[in-house]
Length: 99
Image (cartoon, rainbow, N blue to C red; front, side, top):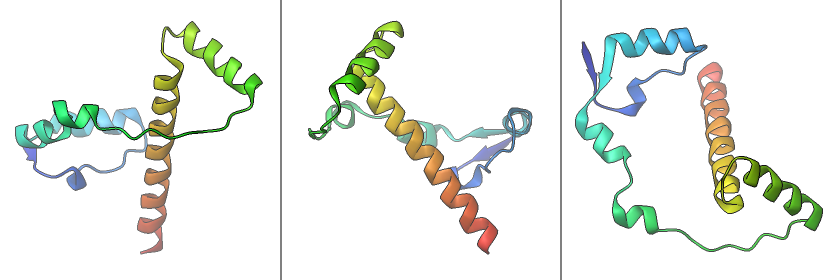
């Protein structure tokens, strides 16, 4: 089994089957995994920001969060994180195509 030392060695996958096949033959290095986990100081490091949101939109967000048993602010952060990952993947794919 091959050990992955850098996240750059992990390719972008077209589907779940390709990803499963890759991870069946490869595994991340333990130091890589430990570095990926937020430590106690990192987890508490956050910046307070102010967003102006339409009250009706906020009410809908809060209802969605309650239905998922989440704090609405945590859900918004999760959404932002997921979207950021999508955008980064898209920009990486565009860079690879352009080469």
